[in-house]
Amino acid sequence: MNFFRIIVVVLLMSSGWVNAIDDSLISKADLSNAAFQAESAILIWSPNDQLKLIANKQYDELERKLILLADNFEMDNVHEWALISSSQQIARFNKPSFIKTLLPMLDSWVEDTGSFSSYTFRGFWYSGMANYYRGIGWIDSVSEENILQMRKNHKLALADFQSALKIRANFSPIYERMIQIGQASGDEDLKLSALRTGLDENPNSYWIRSKYLNSLTPRWGGSFDKMQQFINEAIKKADSNPRIWSLRGAVFAEKAFTEQLKKNYNEASKLYAKALGLGDKGRWIRQLAYSYFMLNEYDKSKNQILKWREYNKSSPWQTRRLEQLLADIERAEALYDLDGTRMSIDLSKF
Image (cartoon, rainbow, N blue to C red):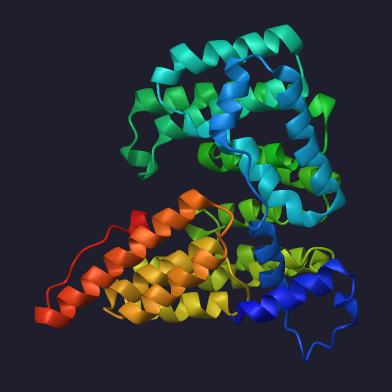
């Protein structure tokens, strides 16, 4: 993708001229990628700043910042990712040690104010703890005790989310996270209720649709047919939010992931390329870079990382991480060129 072209489209979008652009000059993928680029340029609320405000009991400032993020999204779809990501930052502090340190501060905040932001932050923290106990492996590899802890924290998160929604019913990050909770716990009613209510309140949301679509994949009990049916319905709203066009690539990407699990990296790379041809998504770019790396196609792998870096210019942490990954790929390429030695880089690094 030509990023100069993306910037041109972003400018046209901001000036309201997109509807007048001929389809032969600008594709739906270009529109989606331009929206993605604009979305990625918006700064995320730092988790360390959030912790500092919570520790200092600056509750009014926490409420002000969260409401501002929500108001920005109400005015322009491009702010949705900043809203969702910022709301979820507290869930990163999801280790048992935080039960004794952070949770009491969150409890005090709720008890002192009963505010929208207090319920929202504590709910996301509980959902982060549920993710900690669930882990990243297959569900049958999770201990019974951890599953019980996951369910307990899901229940606590949902209770806080319901309290928050009584105050602000259109807060999209909560619906997106409720879909994830339904997916992890196998609660189809919760997933569908969160989708329907979330879209009633946020009809142009990309991220609510994207999260639900992920729950329809075969590995989560869905099917490619169910995915495609949902995509066909979702893109009816794409003129209102161009990011939705990128959902068209999800079936190709899911098939690519399946091939990647089989270590069939050649087929995976072809399918990821097809998915990205319909619109960029960060995970697909990184997975394609990994497939190319495993095929010893180092230049192609680096090009995908460079592409992903363009979407992360507003994040110094991501930029540093990607620079390190590029350096690792270059070392792997040098070793391979020298004597055929293959250097390993874990998928989680991509």
